[in-house]
Image (cartoon, rainbow, N blue to C red; front, top):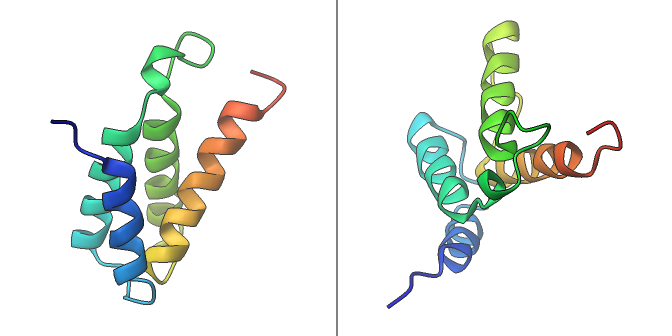
Length: 93
């Protein structure tokens, strides 16, 4: 039996669309995104995983400014997905 993590993530985001972003919510989303991730098969520049880089970069920016950039679960997922897309599709890589 295979687990459909994409469906789980979609349902989680849909059920928590406007729920404020908390540490617990971030952990759930990060875990689901890492389960869905297959970028380890195609490391960028042979060095890093796009999903982990996006999560780490988001956390770095939050710590740098001392606040969350996103205010709800939906915007957090959208931000991470955009960052992953930027890393994967950027011409420099």
